[in-house]
Image (cartoon, rainbow, N blue to C red):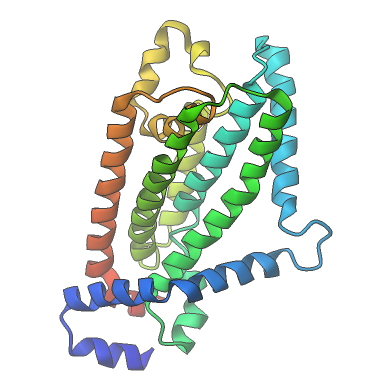
Length: 272
């Protein structure tokens, strides 16, 4: 740690932060390797390994489909597909929000022992989430093969939606990771807000259940984020204003994340 601190003393705060970002992206292969190793170690000596995530997600989809059909009379044959992709997307969003504040705190031993850029630990977290999303998306694939929703050329819109997720996810991760070590209550506060966001966002339920009050969800940016990926995979084109909203949030979060990281980077050494 001392070697990094001495090196930083000869740089301005802004140049040190931007240099860290550049060196972090240069170390992306290392970040990917660490993310993969983290997933492997997490499920070592288990029967299904990472596919426990798939099993858990499949149970959620099956159970919620049964409950919602029984309670609300929802007989839409594509509902399991709607639910599967919604839960997978929300899993990525929730992970970016709930596990970011502790990234540097959890990596304290590595930061102290190895002179690696802070950004590499952020990228490791992002790669871990991408791997987890890939596993959860398998439930969507299976549900789509069983229930056969109408999937057309619109599905290609999932790719720009994924790019927006990565930009927004990296930005919000930078923000929370930069402030997390100094404000240890940040993680629980964000987790509570994320739980509320899950309830008020159409993930388990469909907007038509709100009847004449359905317009209120147009004010929910989480709904826009989920819809730009889910709608194309269900054969629908998301409204243009959803794309504008999600892209605007993504760019804003990225800019805010870079500013927060550059401003807080040196303080991270004193709060770990």
